[in-house]
Length: 182
Image (cartoon, rainbow, N blue to C red; front, side, top):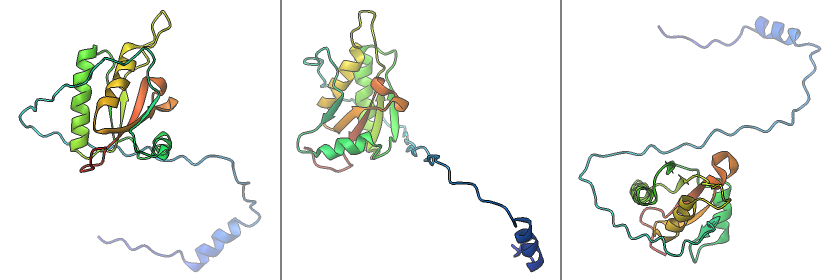
């Protein structure tokens, strides 16, 4: 059965206008318009033979203080500014909480390889803050950020804003599929 969208009868429209007679519009509010959350790309997992990923990341030189941001040579500082502002939006994330250093490094390499293969441009790596009783920074936080600087797929990263993990996560900008190595 087909439904017809009917226009209100002229008499109904007139009754509506009369019912609104004397109504005073509300003053504009100072509310901020909520933006919908970023659309996350759905990763397609295909059953294929496991690919051996070469683990060439080093812990050497990581230091004691984790980097808050990284920008590959030759890129504009505007790239970091846009990344901090949410451009491009985060398409996938990886949580390294509870993993030891070796397991976290291997999982990070797999994640970055998969993200690059699926053409993702921005991902979030959650490593946790790792605060210790002696007041030092977490080992995984420092190492994960150091590893990211060694990955050819990574163009830049910055610390995530508080609502996305703050000091316990980084937003990572990846090379576009087919983009030449810097």
